[in-house]
Length: 216
Image (cartoon, rainbow, N blue to C red; front, top):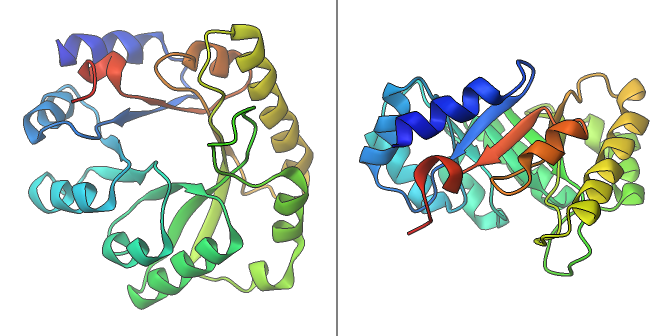
């Protein structure tokens, strides 16, 4: 089932859209079924769980940290994480840079923007984003690469609202891109809304339950 679900989604995605298979709470055998079908990018939202899977599973897997990240957890994944999706503060960005430097590597990051009409979602507003990108302190961070933006839409069946929120992120993305050409990734869209996200300009989607089934 996992293989069939994965291939069906992959075949339907435009070429320019990267699929992150959200494997949180799923056992190793489920990930290996997706791996055998060609998937190499997996997303986890708990650092400890991701570390365990990284230790046990093939080393050509690219691990994406997709959940809210506490600064004191960065050190555990700094050795291997490929992309951190939810960088929602400059303090977290500095911590990632520090831990990347200690591991003699550079870590790719997405800055998380708050677009949802829910107070529970994390993220920067447009003003905070611009302050970071224009600050001297940001330009001195040599061990992080801010390669894009990400956001989560409101958890709702209202497709018009979801589209409006994704469009808001795309507008912000377009406004900063000319001065920040390294910012190429727009990570938005999950199992329930990724088609709308792609229509609104997403280049990376995070899909879990449509591949692996309902969460454990």
